[in-house]
Image (tube, rainbow, N blue to C red; front, side, top):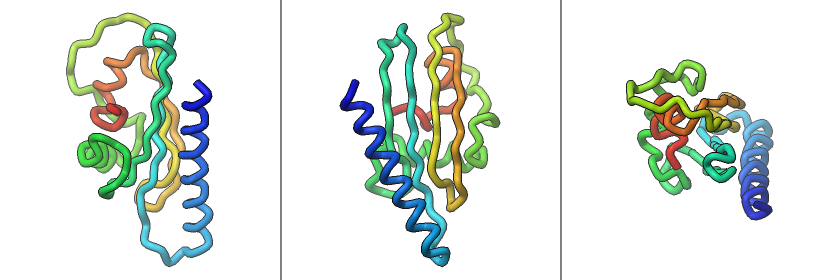
Length: 130
């Protein structure tokens, strides 16, 4: 668990460092740097996952192109992401996801809780599929 926390803190620190750099040099091109996290419930072993999405080659998201397409289609708004129609069970195993950083130069910080991982993936597609 402490390794997960260390990884998350390191990812967050890198985003905040980028934020300070972006503010100091406003002429820099608008970019995307998002820290994505998913905290699963006891049902899923209390797993915690995190990744960085930049929409450029070299980021750590395994489905970068699809995740970026999902964000572009919804304006990076978790609340406007619609379910894809897959059938999910009704078991209660909440998954809390968060997205923090910059989307195309604009600051983003959103947190959303889904009733289970199937519903989360149905709404967010590749974005939190890491």
